[in-house]
Length: 352
Ligand code: FES
Ligand SMILES: [Fe+2]
Image (cartoon, rainbow, N blue to C red; front, side):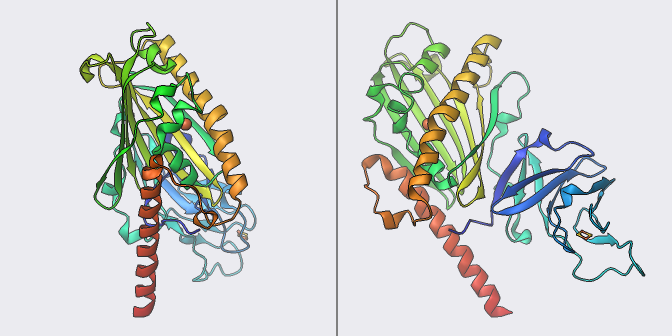
């Protein structure tokens, strides 16, 4: 499987990259080193010295410059070699490290893995609700899934699984039968909405709502920004009531391929403006979500990947159900993006 390259991918929470330190991570099968220049701006370079391929993060940061730990070549923020301490000090033309466009936004560092001239920051998905400082964001986490990002994307675009995998916590049996409503918005965005009237209240919403265990009308509206960024608006209100009189939260789910079969998964929850939680409920919500992702979604999706192995997904002839409309649309969207990129690369190669 190839990846969609011309896209912004979340590399890490932005506070993980501290002044004076190097942070390294594999994104889309490429080793990347991140650090901050003297002005505090993030820098992303290929984590591999062009001399003998030693990871640069094993070297030293000298101001804005990385010095390779093996033979001391130095590289600046653009990846250019600025010092060869050996012999006449001449710098070979090939002594260059790939650099990546990187933008700090919505408390994350976003790296553009494809053609640098196409890196338009306006394509970074809107997670401005993470910027709020007054208790709006209630939890934040990160795990590595031992599964490709498409499997995890399917999990998020088919939330009928809450009725089974997260029964009692995020879902109840009555929530299984709701069918998804799909809406595409431009070439990179898809909405998958589910409406579940008069269902037993799951624990998470009972906690946030009336704490009386009575039935509710529930919604899950998922926004998908291809290739791998998700935001769900989920909540409940009393049957027949208006949404303003209900309660809910936004679930932020941001996936970045690490390799073909593993995925960085950043998640957070945020309450609507003006509805900050008390500290105890916020902590409970945070713990519940972490449990659900780490102990319920992760084992299932990891096991799915292990069962599929390297096989092409469609070659296995998966059974298709009505609930798969979102996942199938996502797979088609990604396929189209990969094909478009391949055609573009081929076109460019022909022109050369
Ligand atoms: S491996 Fe980096 S300078 Fe030799
Ligand atoms: Fe789940």
